[in-house]
Length: 251
Image 1 (cartoon, rainbow, N blue to C red):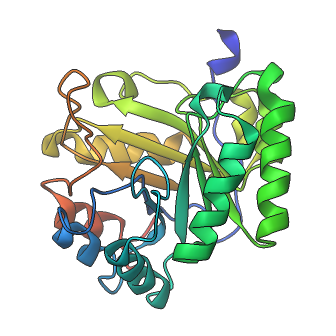
Image 2 (image 1 turned 180 degrees about the vertical axis):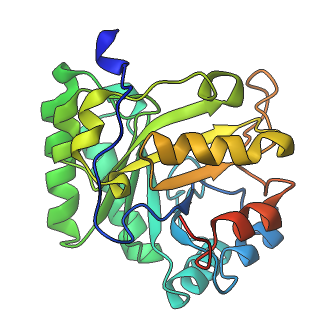
């Protein structure tokens, strides 16, 4: 996998482009995780976006608690993304667009998070079709592709941002970055890492900056072998990581 080896310095970017911020892949329902949703509106938290996932999508009817949580984020000028599960390219196009309509009608989202997005070239045309349709529904829709690994470079021409790593710290600390990513601003890439110990938090932040990720979400919670969702609750060191990445922090 020689295309994943990158040893030289990253090119200079425009001022401020390398400043880190958070992308929240989706907390539990606001009734279950009220503190988590409240924290997202804390002043001076560098939050790039937060995913609203009512029930593996928008749910079957409007949820007033999710509407209230989304509204508070919107009022705080936080970008809210509706969760669309592409199931690695097996999800029917009509179902995806129906879910997108519901997110827009019920929760007034600002864009979409395409979870389990294909990353290989054969899936590119259908993902492009989906993204084009989403932007026809909402002209300024912010679209994030949740690949979880480096896709083929052409995907970078379609999305606003790519999640090029999603997984455990045990893999992230030894991960490599694809060479082609150096052609883009850090604002185009996101890393989601679970199981990051507090003692390795600074190391994880250095890796993200070195690999050119402008958006991160690190947590000490784990998936416990796939038995739970590590993203559903705040990391135990939320206050500390906010202070490390906050707007007053020098890069």
